[in-house]
Image 1: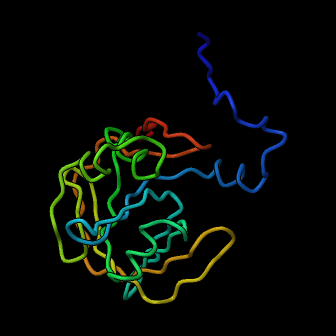
Image 2: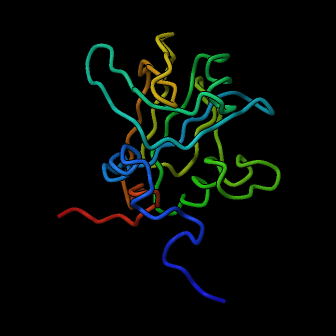
Length: 174
């Protein structure tokens, strides 16, 4: 058995889409967007995220338009956006559809219902958001504009970052 440092079936870098390579070098903290209640819950790992401060403030994100989350968010109109920690990387993989989650990814964490959807207990920060209705397809993604209605900030321990297609351990404050 050979252990690879790279994905064994990945295309060589020279054959990869240069725009995706550029996006991968930007990196960012991984968020988990969740919505719904009971059996109608849906969630999606999102790392293409921007905060627009103001009155009101907004979160802008690029999500998969074919995801269960995109449809559920449109139906409910609300979501919880939580920032994940290094310890949540398996959960992030499950919500991204990259790892198995017998019984569904919501079985991999402890959740509390809020006015905006299910909130992951143990997330260092979270926001309750409401869709503005101003969504449009951009590239292969759906640009979601969500108004921030509530924010809670806790102690950040080890943020989960995503860079060049991989979760990376926190670099720490320098």
